Length: 520
Image (cartoon, rainbow, N blue to C red; front, side, top):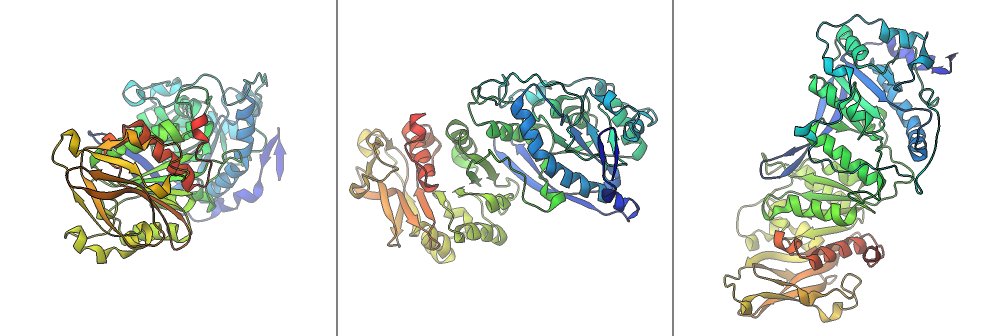
């Protein structure tokens, strides 16, 4: 190992320079919005030539004006080294970009390599300056920036001198903070693809002259390593979520408006990196449904009630293929699944992923009529019951599902919801004002098939005298908690007591204090 001006030059990482080129395969996630507001989270495998790919490490400084930013950056550094080692082996160009400290690296071959690249004739002038915002793409910015994550506000006056020493700089790497120099290198080496990691996603990573906005606009294929970035965000600011949820929201913004994201797993083979202080339980929302405004109601519930204490991942059905719900691999790291999928079907592989999740004893919140779409079939639901025994009977505890409609809007035909007498003391229902809730729409009829069902809520339409369950709990064969409800219409979610019921159910499913969130 050779040391020069404090650089860590790891010869052991350079053994692949003479090896034959390999293919770089990365699993990219992106969000597409339809004109009706439907969000489709798409995952696709990208195959890139390593020699036509650069990896930029953005502003991982040795100090900062924010103490928490420094500490979180230090925590990411070891995983970043794992990523860069593998990328070097493959032949990816590693660019270290600690802005405004180039004097520290003066005279090093890594710095000279950037300065000496020939000027490109097609240089985009925009790469000479910051790009703070693009109105068409950044109009709905998800978080407000007013201070950092430190409590109380930190007053760290650390002097930034260099990139943090923990990050290894290889002999054939490049050091630059110039958009022009990087573009010259890209053109010299015919680099079309850029992998970005570093800090901060909502500031430098997006806006630097060499940042995502400029590179995407200039026509490069860019991906962000979403588990190796952070944000400048104070949880006391809009939308009043945890610091880590703030970063998740910025990542979602980037996926929707700028470029796909990947995880470090693609290069390390290890699970995605997670900060030690990020102890949020992971909720995966499977929303394979177009109607009833499901892609508005559930994400809104997450933003309003779950962002402080939970990590929420959205998995949505593909509007172009109703037999495809990509992204269910997120269940591998989930602590709770929320499933609302009546208008899409899961492929056999996708259903198997849900099956494995349940078989591990994990909890599920099922919003009905989920099983109409999850299991294939075209006949009446009551005649299709033998096609879906696991989902209906084993998971939900029901034998079949159908609906009967309330076609009269007069007050005496409203469906009034009541607590089941034996459920008065259930944690989800304690002091919950069911008497304030009534429905003027279809109810669903269930034949309960399990001894492990506990009905919490039921409803009666006055002119029919039919009483039907509206919410109940069940226990999976593996012992996991299940909460089922037919409160699924958009106007149900518009009612505060319904949103309160869903949040209480989520806390109960995760074995947390149900009333804790109501005291905040």
